[in-house]
Length: 250
Image (tube, rainbow, N blue to C red; front, side, top):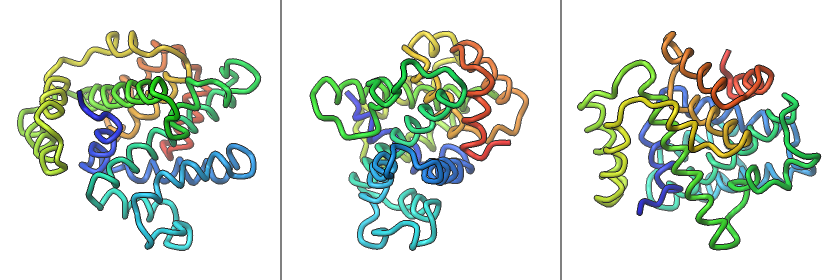
């Protein structure tokens, strides 16, 4: 069974789209400005996941050149701790963006969205076996969403598959993980199947944001795919617009 948390980090390190790092940086900067979590507690957890893979050079990512610079150092690094930190940081960032988007767009379920496991899972390290399994399941869904989005303007050709699998080998991913990714890459684009795996609006918002990390959004096919994803998962226009703006997509 693949370690999906590390696999998210490996995907981001391998370069899913040239805008990936900038969008993650935009989102983290936005969450910082929003003061998410009160007293910076939630944001501190997100930044902590990012900083933990950077070492002493990034004790203060703001002083080191901003969150975007910290992410650049992390994406360019290697090693298991980096993959884990990047994967965990990305999941935390996606959860934070989803929470703020649903609150802004009036789709938050309940008075305190932070109390919902569907949202907070990924904003902190797993504390129980069940939480760890749920987080791995969410990470797997995020990867499927990114792969699906990458197919939205055409099939992923064999050369691109070889490049991705080659990056997985370089990152030390085992044969089972490589085969799982290859199987997902080889499947035809199937939005309905992806949507069927999304259990809640909170997860839908995270999946929409994750999809933005995987594509440039410079073709009509990609834009239409994201519109269909939002419609199929019931995300309203205000939520979609908030996510786009948070990640620097205009």
